[in-house]
Length: 107
Length: 119
Image 1 (cartoon, rainbow over the protein chains, first blue to last red):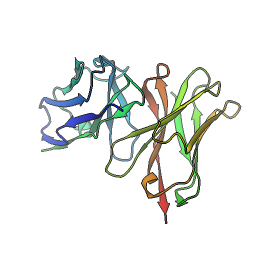
Image 2 (tube, chains in turn green, purple):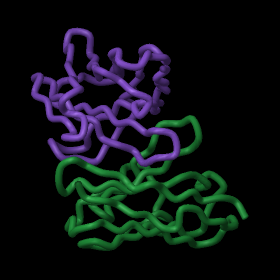
Image 3 (cartoon, chains in turn green, brown):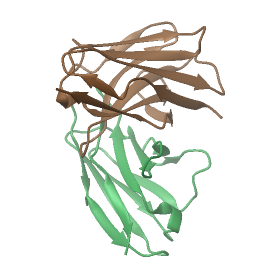
Image 4 (cartoon, each protein chain N blue to C red):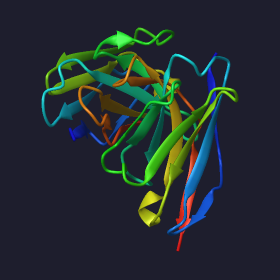
């Protein structure tokens, strides 16, 4: 199975900041990567698929980039509702696998 | 708006069978792939498997010998059975709908249900 490593595991930021989260695959996955947001006790929410395509209704301050093995999720102008855990998922090969997540905390 | 809701026992004894159901509302279960995904405490999410509305299934090789997923289109729901559970199966279990085909990202998720395996 393809291993997905996310970094950092957590970060502290302030409202209005720009933050960048990283996801690395153990082998190339082309552009078959998705990003999710999860808040405590809530269902995960799909933010981005195919590396950079925003899911309907997701604010444009979220953006994704990368290809092959290295991917990033950027959040510009961080809002209070963005403090959450973010995790990525590859769907290039079976089984689909997820990263451990990055917790974005309020500084 | 599609909604998914997991239900089932929150406590299962070791060596017994874990059974969960996911009720789908706000849309038909037909024409989509439906998955179970779990998250052990402090660990990454793990895809368990999917069922298509026709009954076709595919499972994570790590669980394949113990898992079965079925669909009931008349009730708009699908179910998970995991046999011979151990403490390692303690996790929050989510049901989800695929965005796309057989190897997808996941567009809709249930809230999740915690299942604890007791010794």
